[in-house]
Image (tube, rainbow, N blue to C red; front, side):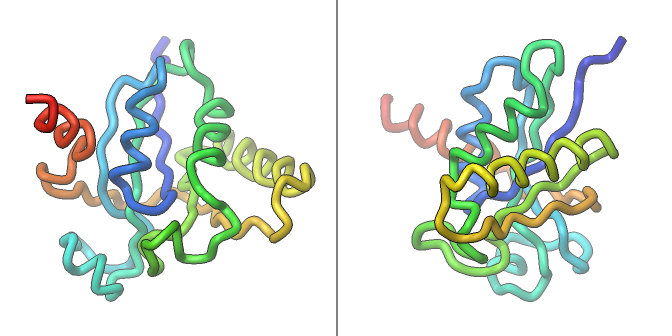
Length: 158
């Protein structure tokens, strides 16, 4: 039985999002890229110019026997402000939107339930604006963006 699953999340700058998921036991592999737009093969400059409609996302390959999709969603909700529309901290623009891209109907159901539960918890005074959408074409960012914060931290220690 294959326990490896994919999950894709946008929670602001993809460097931070990816770095959070890299710390999770059961996450096998991560990458950063772009999803959700209508512009084929976008570059980083295309996306930050806000002409593509893509979000910066972290794609997570995980072992569902070690970490569940629900647990990944809990981490996602905690790592950013899901009530902030097209903005996380100082980063502004649609590429920084809060979004969950689901890869199957089970993930869709779990994501909607998780969002509803969080909204009803009254943790936030404002509505949660996180989009939940089917996964589309994923465009990998360049190598310099992959595991960027981990690389930067290693370089700083040397």
